[in-house]
Every structure is written in structure tokens, then in C-alpha cells.
Length: 293
Image (cartoon, rainbow, N blue to C red; front, side, top):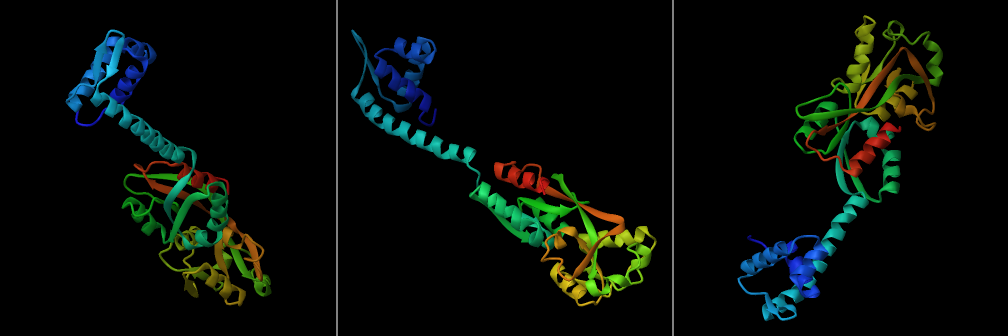
């Protein structure tokens, strides 16, 4: 034994309080030889006698008395440590890092994080934005705790949990809505498209929708900001295809005509985490709220 055994210390203190090894054994529900062995091992560790026998039972030696004084403080310190650690099991606290796309960061996360703050005031989520590939890589390399990305996504030693499906919708300025006779790939490929920049998961999804109809689209503008795209569309410079979350609020779709495409275009968002990541109550709360969107 290289460190002070707290169980042996507690047994010693109980035996002195009860006045005998047998009384301590009865209280602990173990045998008297087991109590004697624990106290003997404690004496061997401290290299001094702690107990002396009397006609009426046992007493603590001078060294034992000194240990008893420290033992009470040790017990208090242990109890305080247990209470401090227990607080983490009852209160959701700490900080996690989350990576996601810019659109989800602007339109999905603010109300979710507001709810999270209300439910778990001691819990913090640090958010960074990027494309799916960069976020997945950061999660793999343990630079992010979790990522909210567009499927398909995956990597070595990652858990991928789908959390929500979202529709992509057509948007055009209200002044131009009558210029579109249909919202199929065949019709829209002849009109000026203001699209997300090439290489993003969103752009790949939109390109695939046109390709499924047999068309390759060449946008008139390629922008990295959903807000910049909507501003250009409001100005009547073309139409776009955007996640519905980007036009969910009345203020977000002001001046815009918003309609479903034919066929309907959807994406699936998923949470990615390392398989060795502990699923804390905070992370579980984030995933649950995403499911509820």
C-alpha cells in the first residue's frame, strides 16, 4: 500500500468510537478478523501502533489520537469532494465546441442555444462555422467535440446520428415571380441562378438535383453567404435555391416569393462525433433539441 487507505482509516475511527473490533465488525457487516486486518495494515503503512488493548476493549494510542484528529478533517474533505463532483451529475455544466455551416449557424442555432441556456444556465456551446469536410476533419482530430453537417458525411471512428430533414426551396423576388412558369430542373436551368459557392455541401446538393433531371447548371453568381444571396435575389438579379430555415421567419422572406421545387429537394442533417466521445448530458441535450426542430 503506497497511499493512505480511506476505508482502513474509516474502520479504525469506527472501532475506536465503538470501543472494540467486534462492535465495529457488527456495524460494518464484516468479520472481526477483517476489521483487525484493516487496522493492522493501516499500522503497517504508518509504521506505528494505533490501537492498544485494555480490559474493557481498545483505546487509541497517542499516535492513534493524532490520526483521529486528522481523520475527521480527511472525512470532511472527502465529503466535500464528493459533493463537488456530484454537482456535475445533477447540473449540466461545462463547455463543448460545435461546428456547423453558416446557414445553420445564422438561422437554426440562435433559438436552440437560447433554449439551451434557459434549461442549462451553466452549460456553454462554442460555435465555429465551416463546410462539412472541414468540420468532419476537425471532429476526427479532436479539435471539435461535435459537428452538425449535411449528409453524406463520415470518417474513421466517427458516430453519425441523423437529427433532422430539411427542404430546399425556390426563392425569387416578388416582382419576378410571374417569370417562372414552373419550378422543375428543365424550366429553372434556363433562368439566372444565384447559387452557393462551388465546393459546399449545399451547392453539391443543388447540382445533383439538376443533374438528376439531365441538366448541368452554370450560375450567374456564386456566393458564400446566404444573406448575400437573398439580397441579390431581392434585387431581381436571379433566383436561388436555399434551405427552408433561411426563409422560415417572416423577416427572412420579406420581398421574396418562396415555393417548393418539383421534385421536392431535401437534405438530411446529422450530428457527427468521435466514437470515444463521452455522451455528456449537455451533448445529449443539444442532440435532443435538434431532433425537436
